[in-house]
Image 1: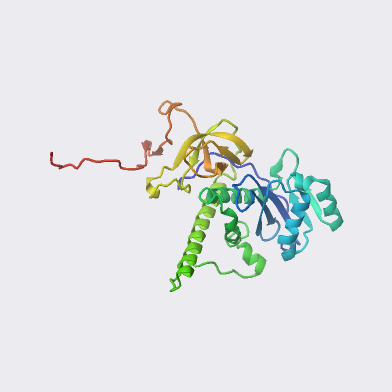
Image 2: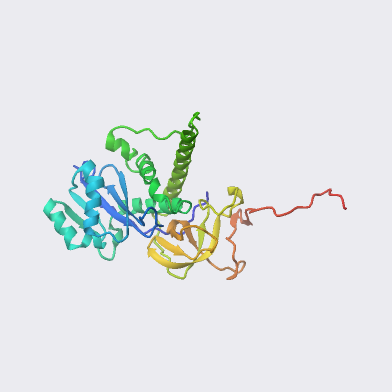
Amino acid sequence: MKVNTHPSAPPLAPIKADPYAYPFSTVTMDFITDLPESNGYNALYVVVDHDLTNAIVLIPCTKTIDAIGTARLYHDNVYRRFGLPNRIISDRGPQFSSQVFQKMNKRLGVTSSMSTAFHPQTDGQTERTNQEIEAYLQIYCSNHPETWTEHLPLMEFSHNNRIHSVTKQTPFSLLLGYQPRAIPHVIEDTNIPSLSERLKQLNQQRSEALAAHELAHALIAQRIQSKFKPFKEGDLVWLEAKNINLGVLHRKLKPKREGPFPITKVISPWAYKLQLLEQWKIFPVFHACLLSPYKATEAHGPSYSEPPPDIIEGEEEYEIEAIVGHSPKNARKP
């Protein structure tokens, strides 16, 4: 896979960990918004164990959630498993900066650490985790825009079951002391059709989730040290097409990139809405790691509408999309 080398990730700075931390004693929380609506939800509440395991809890919600709603989600999904945290790290979103949320933390003895107003990437570890999850979601949602909430358990398991680059262990092994069993790659058929079909679906979903997760991880890691160059509204960009299902039967017939497409809305420094072709039935918001800038050149001027070729040993190399016809060398004339 050719990785987009356009630096699209904000610079990251780590927050010091507590040397006496235990699981979920210091948590980071953030919202990923503007997702396609699925079962009434259009946003995701992400809670990460900051200091010890890097384990995550993914909770579907709506983008209009307030401070009370945020506290209720934490209580129902995180507190019941890990108790109260000692510290919460967040950005200055309205859910976290509100007087209600701050007073509630003070009453419960929870320290609130918020990023500075003009530098929301204060917490580098969380920012990287959130960007990876957001990229993963957007890669996965491009093919499953209405059902992403149904795959959150698999998504959370996939993250917590991967070896972390810093600890060299999985979040599960640090959190639980053992490695939970995953759905196997190969599942034997049964004589019950409905069960066989469900097992096949689970296996396919697992494979898709792992592939999307690995791609997101590779793309974010590729540019984690790069200087941040955000796009702006109106910019033309190429879209990484490897994991987008556009109805092409064979992946070898798919172009590596699609576009160029104009950016119609800047959702965040790393999420952008594109003006796609009308016939495409996919969600139009993509992570910056899937985008690369369009540049007109002498060889490919402003009207050039195909993705640029790869340069192999100084020569332009194109990937064949399809063979539309041929003439046999020794064909007989009619």
